[in-house]
Image 1 (cartoon, chains in turn purple, yellow):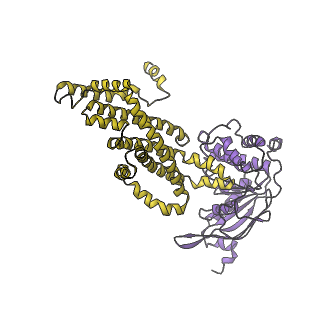
Image 2 (cartoon, helix red, strand yellow):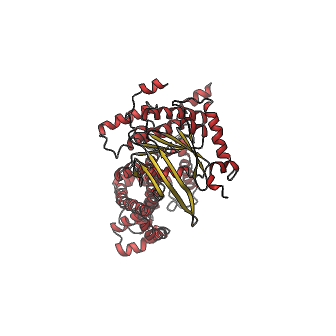
Image 3 (cartoon, helix red, strand yellow):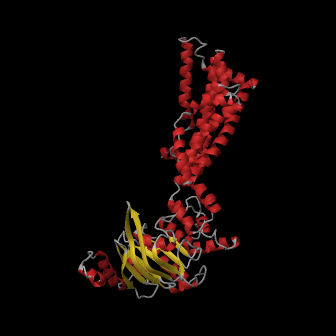
Length: 280
Length: 263
């Protein structure tokens, strides 16, 4: 497995120069029905270059909002988000994102969809076709260059979306439940693919998911978030080498995190991890 | 065995009926019409038999009169539709893209849209007379509103998710317009164009009936004044066939434009 990965031509080579994400005292609120509502509160997170970090949490804990802030689609926040020291205020080709729905344009072929991402880069036009082909190969879709999105299966479309996100060689790739809409078998396959791609690419990746096993399988660390307001509850180190198999080693951690996610708010296990709330 | 052999060639277009089936209704109608004429209930000057209408049509075509009228009407339609559709596109896109333009213009636009285009005829005749400008103007009006509305809906209907993709890849404005906004709005706009085209044709014939010196409508009006009901009916047939063909042609274009949507 590892030899296969290394033997493969790597698009962009070692892109891992940079890609350190630092989040400090991040606070975000929306106004809903005239009243402000806090969605994210006191988020502090440091991600090393080339690291794969998973975020899990119940729905409504603001994990997708967090990714939108990091990618720069929303700049209305307090606190700081810095990528390699530079404050995030808008979108940038340094930060890519894969959404839960693939968001490929239905009137473009797979190759045209991926090429669109390169349009505002200084990559010479002659090189673009080659780079697109390399990334289609990276996600194992060679032969489908001229296919339209409706001709691809869900898993293929999502892999195409991953290729589009990687084609600009972002230092940081954000994945917003990218496999959430896939069936269980396809999901496992694309997880394996994603691990291979990450090992080949070595860019920093931050993935939101609600699947604890997926988070553990891929992540060097798993950030567990709690809802209302969204905050980080615990960060679990997954000290296992990549590529991983889905063996028993992950099970203990999985049970631990599931216990964390399903614990009643304010229950005793909560107090253990959040000493700040013991005063209540 | 026999049934599968029969069904196999039809497989590529399973639900399409033979084109002969669509001819059934007109043929039956023509037959009833002819029979009613032969029965002698109405005088032949009032209810002209279809055979007579056919003869009149071929006579009109021989003298070149029919071609001249059809040509005049089509030229007005082409000019008026082009102006009206372009103006409608620009207007619809503008009120969809600019909140200010929408606030200022949209309520007025939707109010005026409720007025039947024919109701503008008296005013237009006063201002423009009954010459070319009047007929082109009425076509412009008839085409403008459906296209403007379709452009507005089309642009507003572009999913925010696609615009976010463009933001993430920092797509430049020309690429955003040509590669994303235009293809995304095309199906709605083409539907609007089709509706506008058939409406414009109907309104043009009506306007020509009221005031014109040439065109299919005028040919019918002259026929009425000279009690040539055969000429009037010939005009009905010709305008109907042209309207039908315009709609069919526009539908073919529409299908091509929205291929990605139905696929």
